[in-house]
Structures are given as C-alpha cells and as structure tokens.
Image 1 (cartoon, rainbow, N blue to C red):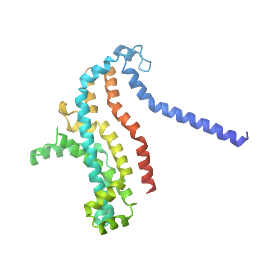
Image 2 (image 1 turned 180 degrees about the vertical axis):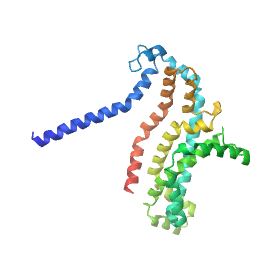
Image 3 (image 1 turned 60 degrees about the vertical axis):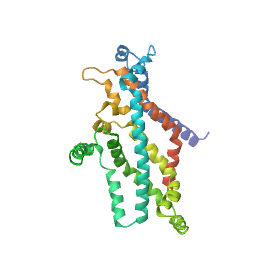
Image 4 (image 1 turned 180 degrees about the horizontal axis):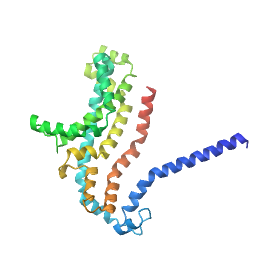
Length: 284
C-alpha cells in the first residue's frame, strides 16, 4: 500500500467518524424523547439520559386522552391536505403565467414573491393579528378559529416558495409544446392542465413534501389563529401538558412522539421523490 493510499484511507475513516458523530448528535434529542416517554416522573428527573427501568406504555394512552389525539389528528390532516392542494394549484398556475408573460408586470410580481421569502414570520405576527380583527369587525369575515382562516394563511405564506420552484421548472419546458397544442385546438386552460401541469410532476412532489412537513409541524401560526380547543392541530394540542405550575414531562414526551410519527412515516415513504424533484429542478 502506497503512502498516498494510506492517507486517503485515513482521511476517509476520519470523515466517516465525524459524519457518524454528527448523525448521532442529531438523533440524540429523538433518543431523549423516546426513552423519557416510557418513564415515570421520578425516574425521568433522576436521570433523563438513562434507559427506562420499565416500559410505561400507559403514558401514551394518557397523553392521547389529554391531547384529544384523534380529533387533533383529523384537524391536522384536513388543514394540511386542503392547504397543500390549493398551494400546488394556485402556485403552479401563477408561475406558469409569470414565466410565459415575461413582461415588466410579471417580473415585478415574481420579484415580490421572491422578496416575501426573506421576511421572517415573527415580524408579521402583530400585523396578522390586527388584520384578523379588522377582517371580522369591518368585513364580517371570520378568520380566527375557522378552518378557512388558517388554510387561507397557509396558502398565502406557502405561495412564495412554491412559485419560485415552479417558475424555475416552467422556464425549462419548451414553448413549442404549448404552441403545438394551441395549433391543435387546445384552449389556454387545456394547454396548462393537459401539457404543462403533468410535466411539473417532479416539482409538484417536492412542493407537496416540503409543505406537508412545514404545515404538519407548525405550531406558531395555529397558536395565533386557533384558540378553540375543538380546532387544535396536533402540535398545538401538545401544549396541554405544560401548565402554569406543573409540567408532565413524561406524558409530554409521549405526546410529542405521537405527533412526529405520522410525518416521519410520510417522509421515509416519499424521500426518494424529493431527491428526484430537487435533482430535476437543478438540471432544468
């Protein structure tokens, strides 16, 4: 074995070790959550990092009761699915029109979409609350404590990134395909739904995955909009474990574990599609 081969082997071992340690560091919070979800409170406070002496699966049943888990699961599913469907439809149509118009107005609209991606959500919280109050008092349109209100906001906040992704992909679609369809008698809407939309499949999958993970795990926006317990999503329902004077950490860990299981299953089932989507967008 030459000296160069030895150096390459040592470098590869060091790099693999560092990556392994980095991976373990990212998995450590998950380990803490899982083991503490199976302990009683005394055992948890005694040693949070030790393995449980017994498996208290009853923590999960109690956590599901306090969270009203099935209702919260239904709320999260409904809000997430409806929001993502509208984000995909509206943003793909908007990006297609912007890319094909390509005039000053469409460039300005595209610039506004991209610019809004840079604005932190925390800076919009107070204006958002004021807008919700104004909408109810002036227009008579209820936004607080309604499915429609939070879905409308998710569509608005999710459009910018989706338009950005779709716009980059649409620019790579040959215009001649759309012109040929038009010559064959296809209407403007038919060109989009029959020619353009099916070709956007890689980006559609990417947008769906990113938005599902974001909306499913989001806590901040539902905490502003959904005060009614019957409308709470899964992340929001985990707040039932954190009282003013007491915190049921073991049950909270069980509740958090149940909250992340659906999105982890979804991610592992769909991860190959997001890689394909990102790769396709990069090539375009």
